[in-house]
Image (cartoon, rainbow over all chains, first blue to last red; front, side):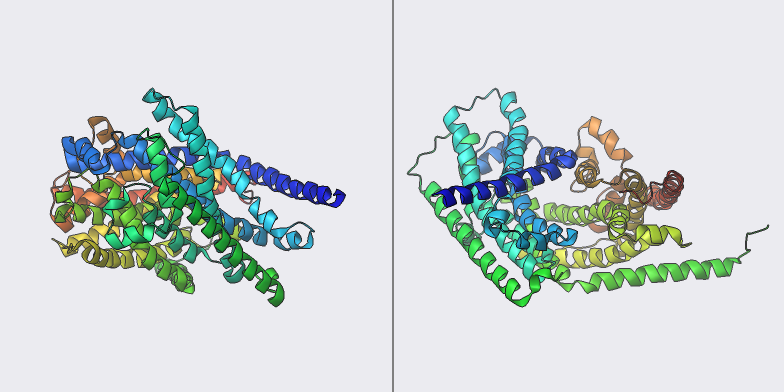
Length: 281
Length: 279
């Protein structure tokens, strides 16, 4: 019992240390947080501006007909914020390990008695904190502008959905981390993964506009369910029910991606330890 | 004059040509050193293209989604998206990358013309932009069945080369800011989308609200894309054609001269204050 408590305390210390370190790095460059808040606005302005310029006065009506949403600003703000956060999480897992390698601190982690899986998993918490701050700061102004009040259940559902939606991204992040350990400079592959997830998730458009075969592919991507469910709650004011098949699909695919990420990471880590690849970069 | 060596014009030209050759050689070598990046661009480009085009199409009725002219606008918009990004990320942040690699001080210790800093990136960008132009045209045909046609090939080539020069001049000016401010990643991100928005790269700027049109006319890229669009899809230009050609040519020269002056000024300033190596 005492050993278990000690192990728990040590694990919590690992999580705490990673959280403090990463938040310190985030806060060292606060201008990036400013960018994450403003970038969805610039993207929204770009889409809306171009849309208006090419379609003229009928732009808004066409948009309502094509999406069912009556607020293009909120629609694109929500979509581009979730898109941005997804891209950051996918990139950051690989980038965190790569920067540890470049700083020469990567091997030191393997000399410490900390659980490595827990160590790399802990990165999701600081990134999650920044994500919630960004999404709240980005979406609050248009919601206030519309004088819409979200009930507490909707807010809680949003947080729960974001948390579940981060798990598969984290799983993909672990795969990119594995690729980092194996190939050292995996940015080219990460670029393809990011583009694929972004297109198939339908963050910025309803998935029905995609070709049929791509719609089928998107059903295997958890973030496609996340985008639809978040839109239902925040844009269409719908109540989410536990028996909603999309929620079940989100949970199942998220867990599958997470398990896949862990599986691949452990395999590559094992391989790198055996071949001595850990210290080569 | 004591301490100053007289160099003939031909020797000076030979020297700068050698420096430019070395910079271009470096650029080409670096570009082909990472073939995975080229493959990744080829695979990911159609996906990014879809991601950008579909949200804009949502403002049109579905029956107009097959309109050829709309796609021609999008195509040249994507090409200029690439050129504006190059200006900030390839040229502007070239200094930052040299700083991070620890080679900036060596470059500034040498007597090489500072333009070589950008010539390397210019060569790389010329390669990747040429590839993008061909590749995006093929994608437009495969994905949307739209054939990209060019009205005046010579004018288009001329306008694209000048646009790259304007981008490099703008990049040099921005590079001076990078040298001074060091960490400009956030600024580059925001500036990129502001420039794309106000320069009317996806549509003619006269469709912008009047207040934004003032900003649009202040952006050098507005005239570059306007000229390229005129050459490609025969759209009317903002100014009479010959005046716009002259303006873009002047912008290409003035922006580069201003950029080099600004770079020179900041370099001297940071050398005096000892902040060249601080980042």
